[in-house]
Length: 191
Length: 193
Image (cartoon, rainbow over all chains, first blue to last red; front, side, top):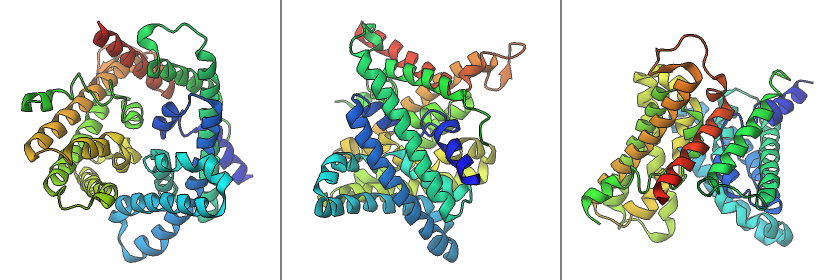
């Protein structure tokens, strides 16, 4: 039950993009088509869960154990950057179809603040490892949900006559704002 | 490009937030009031200036292949410095900006300037570029924060000049998206005429 609440909270109530403003860059950047949006969310889910596990272990067994808490930012970003690179190499070797689906999105993920953000949040909220994994997976699902919905709306938007200055980013931001309003309806569910 | 232009381009012509649309996450999250926005902007400016200085000074010592990881380590060091300083001297602001201080490290503006400008230009140009871009970002955050504070709370710099509640939605997350959307649209409109 506790985990169910955690999932609902991470996917709907505290949606990573719409309520916590993490990962807005890819949210605006790769939301032109539903298919690319889905690919990106797959890659993010994969990396986010992996990064949370690895950074959690590093924080507990290396940084905390040796009193090096102030190195958190440097360590985490390097771990995530190399992790992404490693995932890319391994995927290329063992699963060509998966690589083709996710490969092009992987380099973009290093600078996705949602991945680093979730890794730090898991530590700050003092989750244990299992809670951390559930939280990061649910957060990634929330990110995917928001991304795919926005992509769906933007595909329709091609047919609409948008005022000149509003084209592109501004109208996407305003749609995101309306989506955030809709997601606020979930406030009060869970915790 | 003259040195003056290196400095001034960050304010309007190539404003990182309003024209290049970089660094959206902190811009949306930390602008609940003008002061928070400015605080975030100044923290980013410090990191940008520091990383530009170091990267411009040592860029010919860094092998091309490990350029990006080296830049990230330099940026992360400056972020750690800011993080510790703010924790010690401005605990209240540090509490409010929360996770977005360590996240300056993945702010595309900082890495973008390191890669596109500081690694190729002289020290003085890089200092001016870092300052200009940082202050341009700070200005954009200040404007957005001031607007959201006035509309949402009827106050500016925590000074309340309207009775009662404002349009609460502008303090909440939907308002951030909508306000930034209209601000960018306005800048687009001005630039094209």
